[in-house]
Amino acid sequence: MKNNDLLIFSGNANPELAKKICHNLKTPLGDAEVDRFNDGEIRTRIKEDVRGRDVFIVQPTCYPVNENLMELLILIDAIKRSSARRITAVVPYYGYSRQDRKDRPRVPITAKLAANLITVAGANRVLTMDLHAGQIQGFFDIPLDNLFAVNVFMDYFEHKHLPNLVVVSPDVGGMKMARAYAKKFKAGLAVVDKRRINDKEAEVMNIMGEVKGKNVCLIDDLVATAGTLVEAVAALKNAGAKKVFAAATHPVLSGPAIERIEHSELEELIVTDTIPIPKEKRTSRIKVVSVAPLLAKAIDRIHNEASVSTLFDKVYL
Image (cartoon, rainbow, N blue to C red; front, side):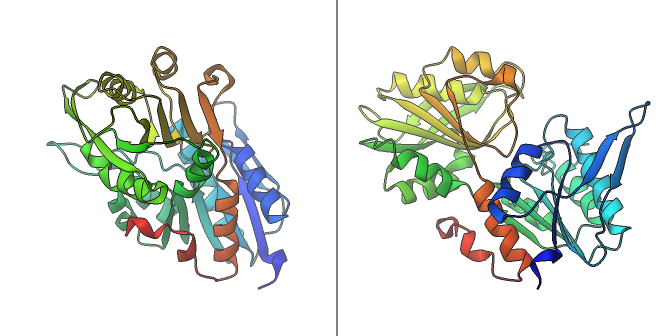
């Protein structure tokens, strides 16, 4: 396949990440106009020839979720109608992923609805990172590659040289991910046992595992309001943990998240650039590591019809 077959476009959700990916691939970012009509409708125009090309659209469906999802769908439609050979939706953060099942009567499975929309719009493939729930992969009737940020975080913590490290899951549901990180870090494993009061509050009960006198790294796929995170930090400190760090792939950081993090005993929150952090939410407590090189490798392998499985972390299996 010729290198000039590859084209990468970006919506307005995270253009900086798209530029970093292009830099790693040594290819220019595709020329596309994505703005608004006066009434707020999205107006898109692809300003270069895509006929017969292998096109990748970088667009996480982060805040504002509905706007960014619609931009993605409209970009896919515009490129499909321009006769692209293949369209891959690169969705580093997959919005609506937390609504992945019917956990009560008369609620939607919005993660499946979003998958249907992306597929019907015309995407041939999806590339994403650290899905909130593994079963979302089965919601798509097209190939999906779900990458993991574990090696990116591992590189960061190796430079910290933290002794007596214990990896902690903030809840029982995250044990699989925490176990994978503990295996990679050659560290101990613990879990915060908590009882949820309602949709917005969670009461921490106790710590399952030994954390006294140890450095701790809390692992999660995303941080939204940081309520669970801050409660877990407090419980770990009460249990005798020395320094408490946290690593989360997707910095959603909604509502009172920044205020809670700033008033907690958390040393650092390490996140990736799947979601851009606005200036008003940037703080010295939050460190950002880039997943652009990993996404660039995956795009290069997909483009050249090579195996992407070598980029998956086998400790999840």
